[in-house]
Length: 245
Ligand SMILES: NC(=O)c1ccc[n+]([C@@H]2O[C@H](COP(=O)([O-])OP(=O)(O)OC[C@H]3O[C@@H](n4cnc5c(N)ncnc54)[C@H](O)[C@@H]3O)[C@@H](O)[C@H]2O)c1
Image (cartoon, rainbow, N blue to C red; front, side, top):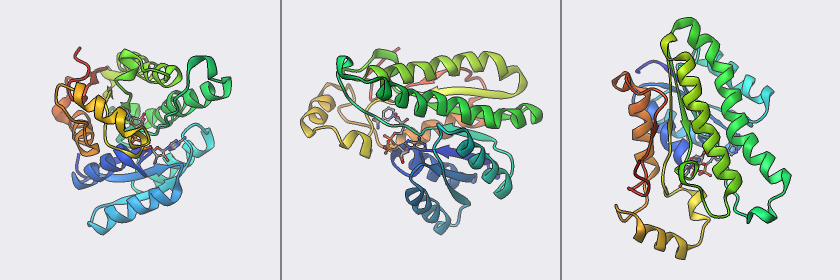
């Protein structure tokens, strides 16, 4: 993978930041894309300070023109994208009865439309050179559902379906598509939930603890590598044993 170009969305924080740092340490040139431009810049600066190649790009993955700008920045700075990690995400908890159409639309826009737009923008060149990797960050809640998270769970299940279907379409042309469905991981997204919930949740995990962002990043580094050549349309579960399929 050394020398190849990666785009990681939502890389200004949490899991995406860990993925960007890991891929850069593995020798890839990394586009750190995030709707939060300053956070993206800080991550890219930290990677650059370690002597690796990174560039921050501000953009909202649900907006077609922003996605075009992210992919163009990658092309102009480092070259065509070899590895796309669709990681950008949001969480919002509400009872189904209280969910508004706007809540639902935004959740699907960031996760599903974002994954669609970013993938669509990089796929053509990948097919042309018959080489590329797409890694979609789903969630175990897309497999088992989550309380007061209907829109989030639906979006993550859609990402798993998108992954499988696209994998069937493009694998023979050299593009591997897989998903990662993490369990609870210590990031700002999860730290926003109450400490009581986090303690109770940790107790019910077979491993007894939440994951760290770097432990998801290592799954991404593996699935993106040629070592994972036989993994096609799979959903890996770095989830502390919470879901066993
Ligand atoms: N933390 C967990 O326990 C957990 C578990 C399963 C799946 N996930 C998934 O992992 C991914 C990363 O989550 P995290 O826990 O690191 O959260 P986080 O909040 O730390 O990071 C998410 C990043 O995505 C960015 N982002 C949000 N909307 C965006 C948009 N429209 N365009 C571009 N960037 C956008 C945010 O600015 C932020 O930097 C998400 O897809 C999340 O659903 C997280």
